[in-house]
Image (tube, rainbow, N blue to C red; front, side, top):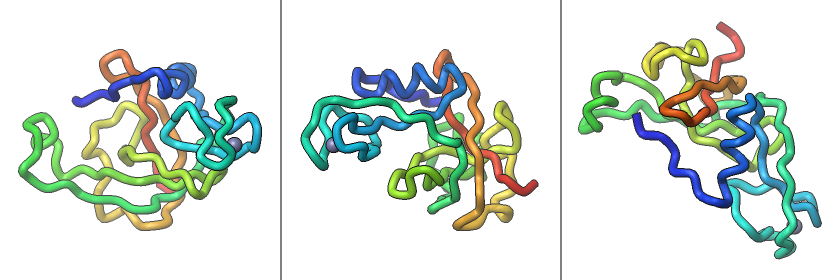
Length: 141
Ligand SMILES: [Zn+2]
């Protein structure tokens, strides 16, 4: 599996996921949330930031069902999904991820026919190669 490349700006995000928290960087001056993490606020140019705890709820904003050619380990799991989740607490922020049946379930554990744009999801976390990644569970099973 491919795991995230963690840079200095994004490191806090992954430290919080390791604690089971989904936090999004916010400007400490004007309060605007921003993602992906970066040093400077695009709204007011402040370099002061904080990490705001999210509820972990969201909706599927878009999704794809990747088809071959795929990397071998992914080809073995197709068909699976890749989703963009719009956060309930921050509707302009969308996180890429996968909808799965349980936090540790395989990528192909949800029937693609169950996916809908707008479907409510909630975050779950699983550790992959030492990195705790957010994944998404459908709210209505
Ligand atoms: Zn700002």
